[in-house]
Amino acid sequence: MKKILSVLLALTMVLALAACGGSSAPAATEAAAPAATEAAAPAATEAAAPAEEAGSTITVGFAQVGHESDWRTANTKNYQEVFSADNGYDLVFVDCDNDNAVQIEAVRTSIQQGVDYIILAPIQSAGWESVLQEAKDAGIPVIVADRQVDADASMYDAFIGTDCEVEGELAGKWLAEYLNGAEANILVIEGSVGSSAAIGRTDGFNAIAAEHPEWTILDSQSGDFTQTGGQEVMESFIKSYNGKFNVVVCQNDNEAYGAMDAMDAAGITYGVDGDVIIISYDATHDGLKYTLEGKINCNVECNPIQAAYVDTIIKQMEAGEEFATYTLVEDQAFVAPGIESAYATTMTQEVLDGRAY
Ligand code: AHR
Image 1 (cartoon, rainbow, N blue to C red):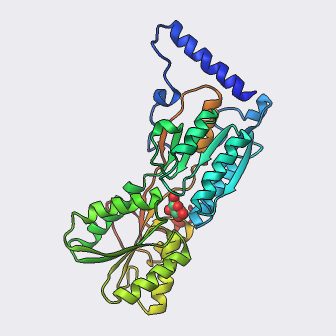
Image 2 (image 1 turned 60 degrees about the vertical axis):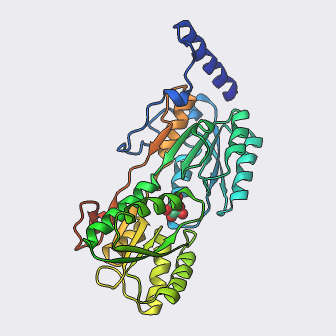
Image 3 (image 1 turned 180 degrees about the horizontal axis):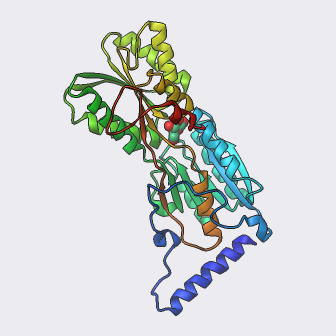
């Protein structure tokens, strides 16, 4: 019924524009203003009345990456809170366990079930064209969340997430400021291969590294965004490069915990009082706790609280209103006490207390 109403609404808009002399009806994605990067997360129920009040429930299929990290757990919890029955939703949640084939199948199943909307947090950026076309053919709007897809933006309705390339650049700029011309021998523990989060952070950091001939990236291997992966990669790095490195870049907090365990076991000191500088990403509660303790030197945020933006977009689509087709969630960086930075906030207990995830 809702889909029939949507089609009628779209037809009405086309007819209204034609009556006004418009040559063609703008697609919603063309009409929408880009969202401001500075915008605060909208309250979940702020945008429009819950669909329940209109007597219908919005069914949303959510193909989530998995449960690989603390960040992901916080992101999932945020979606489950916002996409609640009380807010007018039936959330069909699928944990794809970091398996791309499972995720493609999850989206296909949502299409077959005839859900009203699909939220896709893509494990990998490549290979989404066919299934996005299938969703388009079925008339089901798709919102890409958290990570990017390589497919053209015309293949889906909206993107909302963080800019991981900017996060990588931020880490690199902070390191350049901190080292102030000193030599760096760097090991990188990357995130999941093929994910836009790993690709962006690697590209952003490498772009800054390219400006610093005094830096050498000794090695770069995937730890799959997990603590176990971070520990295994760090153990293997220690075998190959012990005594030769002074910077470890971990592309998320869980990898950093694993890397710290491996360095503890090998008697390698790290953090503000140690031999090795640690950079991490995510700035989850525990990541910031280690930053406050001086064990992680710099932690670049990736904000997992994203569901309210998607809720707003869906409510706007339901109401036939314009919606933002590209929304960047604001990020910042944090550094250990004793470090002053133009690029980052120095950690305090107050900042940590305010970090709920
Ligand atoms: O896509 C966001 C990344 O995915 C987070 O940095 C990481 O922790 C998660 O697994």
